[in-house]
Image 1 (spheres, rainbow, N blue to C red):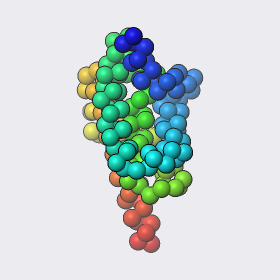
Image 2: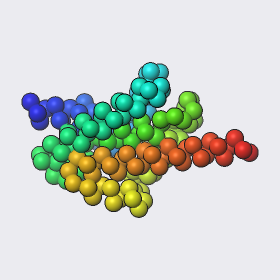
Image 3: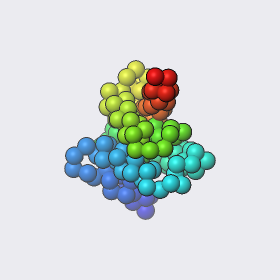
Image 4: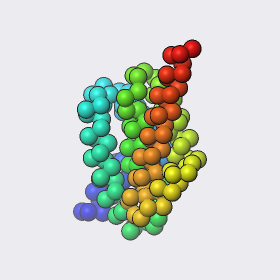
Length: 152
C-alpha cells in the first residue's frame, strides 16, 4: 500500500510515465490545472497546497528512490510544486503563466548554482529542493520582468 500511494503521488497519478520529457509534461499539466481551476489562483489556497505537496513529495520521492534509484525521472511531484511556486502571486493571465512556465523549465533544466547544489541533498529532500528553488527563481524572474515592462 505504501508503495502504491507513493507511486501515485510521486508520478502525479501517472503523468510521470509520459514517454518524452515527463518533467515538462508535468509542469505543463500543473500550469493547465492552475489556469483552469480559479481557486488555485488564490494565494491562501495555493501556498498551503504547495507546502502539503512538498512534504508529500519528500516522503514519496524517498520511497521511489528506494525502488528506482537516485531521482527517478517518473517522479514529477516536484515539477508541480516548482511550477505552482513560479505562478504564486504573479498577475493572472496566459502571458504571465507562460512566462512562469518558461522560466521554471529554464531554471529546472539549467540548474544554476544553488539549484544544482540543492538536488544533491539526500533522498526526497534533493528531489524536491531543486524544484522549489527553481520555482522561486522563476517567480522572481517573472515579477522583475513584469515590473520592468510596467516601467517602459
